[in-house]
Image (cartoon, rainbow, N blue to C red; front, side, top):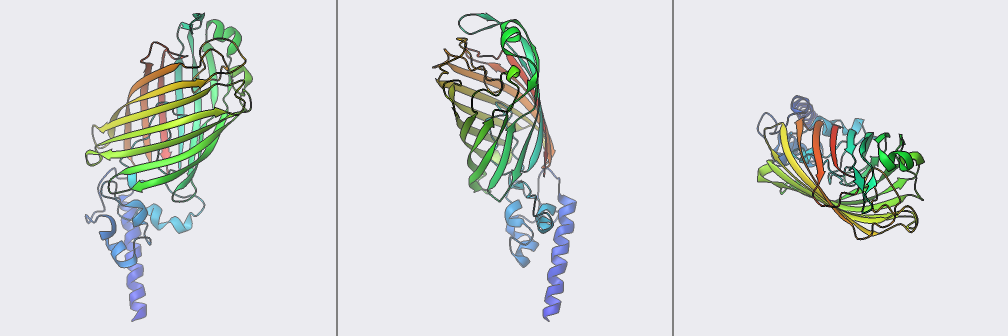
Length: 353
């Protein structure tokens, strides 16, 4: 009798895994039987953890028992992303500091073309031109709640003009920034997320690209998200504090980022985002430019304390399934103070496990 029960249980597990492969990658809906969450036959017979149902199912992003859950025992060294929130998309504005609150394992190539204003700061210093950034972020889920994140790296291609080109900026490597993120709140039914973490920017970039300033800086952040309208809309918000190790050569800032998206179709999202920067303290040494460099470059300039910059973007994302998304966004300043931003176009792709 015991052997019969074990054979029956094995058949259920195999059926679960076969259903997983058939349904993995769908953009919405549950398994073909219409079973949701822990009402799934896999979960009823074997418990929520045996097929990963507890980790991968919820009322909106349910995939049945996903292949990632069934194969977790074979891939212990690479944990899958939390697919219970596959209806969300990742933010794009201030991509170095606006962290997705989900626990993810992914690779994210990013391309940015950033236009400088014709003049910089209160002294109307001649500028203009642009820079292009080619970067690759990655995130690795270490546990169900903890992940390693690498958010800044890549190569900066200088096409700036004026004083920027002659004195401050040339092509070269960007600094590398990495750290940890921990998921504090995760409610699959209400679609509520809250995470906190930190990164450290390692000053190992090219000095001619206005990188490798001082002894690096820490970024402490909190980031959250909320599902709206049954998964047809979402909001994300993050608050962060950048604290240089050597405050005599780098400015200290706080920033607040917000994201709102709506589903246009099952695969296409429209979104809009804004970013607020406030310079709490300025460098004690450096040129009195009155601008700092935002998220791409570190000018180490003075005369920036008290400055406020608000930027806004509009964009679109294509997300055919939970393992891939691609987006494009156009960003521009809303405040009279522009720091070093005239406008910016960002393009990203995400390959998610």
